[in-house]
Image (tube, rainbow, N blue to C red):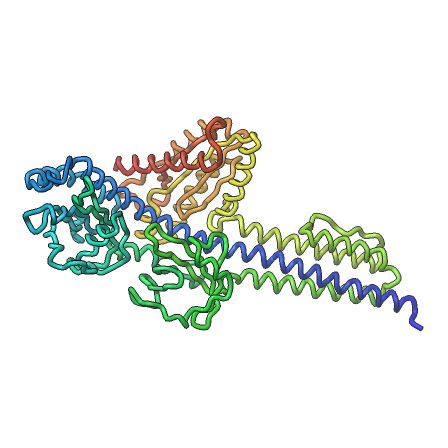
Length: 550
């Protein structure tokens, strides 16, 4: 017959081992979830940042083309006027100045043109076509292509025939313009008056300048970005391993998780898991304004390196905990019943993510030591979770709050707005010369410039959260006392802004930023986004004013 002690030991072990597995499993699950979220947010943030840069170019290009097309339409009473070469000459003179200035403002425009419909001309062609000189940076007039000589030739006249045939403004996919031997993408729009084609207005962007943005994308250790026609079609335009215009072989990529996201416009807060040439990788993507896909990819081992390390540490903790419980069960079975119930309750609370308690120490003997061991495990788990959360919500360079923390604050403010309890201001700060410092002095000095700006902001707004959510962008949310003193604080920040002297050898020591602020209006603002847009718009207006005062 088994003794009571043996039965208690068997009973204790039968209960404790499953509990240990549950505790370990829950800890591992939480670590896996948090680290997976961190990796997804990091990669999607990198995609979003690059997407914003590229879409800014595309959207501004569209605005310019639509503006000039509207000017053509408004200045041509009827198609008959276009047949008059003197009328066309005056119209070209009227359009050229504003078109040139608009093209310069975008910065990456290779050519722009207005091409009158050949059907209305006695001449072979008329209009203007200006090409940017790579040496001088000025736009020089170039001889027009006679489209009727080539027909619908992809490399020479697609910019004319494709928008005309589709009857609307279109983005042409990257192509080689054989007229000037340059890879580019074009946005062209047909202009009609009284249902008659008058002209085609367009802008060409040198594709090399867009490729530079994509090639600069880095994530984790070896992750990179690339441009593709679409997920699934895989005509690659920018890729470190393939030449321009390569169609990626089907056997190279095998999707293993979240493949359904390829049919959406972006991965959002998720990642697509796949195998590339035998290597497991993670992918995030976004659809650009012109329809192409911008993709960021990294090896799975790099994306989840912190998760794997944390899981190993957690397993060690679980093994140690199990060993302690096992030894305690063998030698102190008679005193285990009551603490066992307490440990069971601890498992339930830890399972719900609660690590804010401790197991009471009822005796000073070995059973009390078991209670200490359980408490030590709780502390370790709490520290692991706290460390992971801190890493997920803190900017690595400046140690202020990061984009994830910023998004959480937005949700909090939107809830306050919905309940009618919101009262806050938003300040946007954008560094003006970070790219110059990085390119001229290196990224180490660029980091010093970022830290200088961040330190100045934190010194002024001591009681308000500061967020860094872009390489050179900061946001400050003012509430409570700082909100009441917002005018004085913002004035103080403006007083600290100083443009580096032209001959300065340490431009990273200057706080040269653009600032925009906005305050929540209860009578008109429906969400945080309304306040943000005003602050962001004022910040860009400030930046534009600063650039205009060079």
